[in-house]
Amino acid sequence: MKFNIEILRKNLPEYLHTLQIEYFEKIDSTNTYLLKRKKFDNEILVITDFQTAGRGRFSRSWISNPAENLMFSIGLPSIKVSDLSKLSFLVPLSIQESIAEVLELNLFIKWPNDLIIDNKKVCGILIETLIENNENAKVVIGIGINVNQVEFPAEIKMRAISLRAITNKMISRELLLAKIISKIFEYLNSLPYNFEMIYEKYKNKCTGLGKKISLLFNDKIYSGLLNDINKSGELELLIGDQKLTFNSGEITILKE
Ligand code: BTN
Image (cartoon, rainbow, N blue to C red; front, side, top):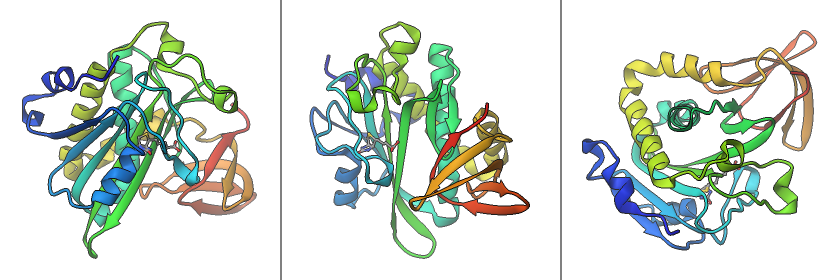
C-alpha cells in the first residue's frame, strides 16, 4: 500500500506539524533530489515508495521493493560545520531507539552508522553535505530501512534482513517514521547541551568495541582491535602497539 503522509503528519508532535513534507510514488533518489534542488531554506522531509537509482555509501546502490520499506531524506538548511560529525552519532541512535520503542527490538549500531542484527543489515544511512561557507552547511540525511520486505535479491540476501522478517509482524511504516522523525528532531534540538549523552548512548549500542575487527578503507584491509570511536566519530584501531584512526570505511567483526 502507498505511504500515507496524513497518518505520518498526525503522529508527529505538534511543533513538527508545519514540517515541509514531500512524497513521491517514484523518484531516482531522495538524496539526489535534495542535493540537486539545493535551495531548501527550512527543514524538509522527502519520502518515496520507490527509487530507480537509490544510492548507498561507497557509490553502491540501495535496492528496495516498491512500497514495502522506508526510504527518505531529511534536508537541514543550516548546520554548524563543527556539528556535522555529531550527526553520525545522533541519526543511527535515533533510529535504534525508535525501533526499540515501537517494536521492542534491540538492534546494534555498526560503525559508522549501519543498524544490524545477526550481522545482517536493517538500515543504512547516507549523510551528504553541501558546504555553504566556513561555518555552515546544508545537509541531506538519507535513510533506508528494510521494514516489510521479506524476499531479498540473491546479491544481498546474505547481508540484508527486514524488521518484519525479524519480528514476524507487518509494521506500520507511517507510525515508525513518525517516531524516528520526532526523535531525530528532539536530539537535534538538544545537541548543544546533550552531545555527551548522545555520544555515550551511541557507543553503548555499538557492536565490535574491544573486539578484533577488519576494516576496509581505500581498497586496503586493516586488522586490529577496535579500541574506541572518538568524539569526532573516528574509529581507533590498535594494530600491535600502533594506533590508527579512520574517518570512514567498512568494518567486519572477526571475533564476538
Ligand atoms: C548505505 O548503507 O550504504 C546507505 C544507504 C542509504 C539509502 C537511503 S534510501 C533514501 C536515501 N536515498 C538514497 O538514494 N539513499 C538514501
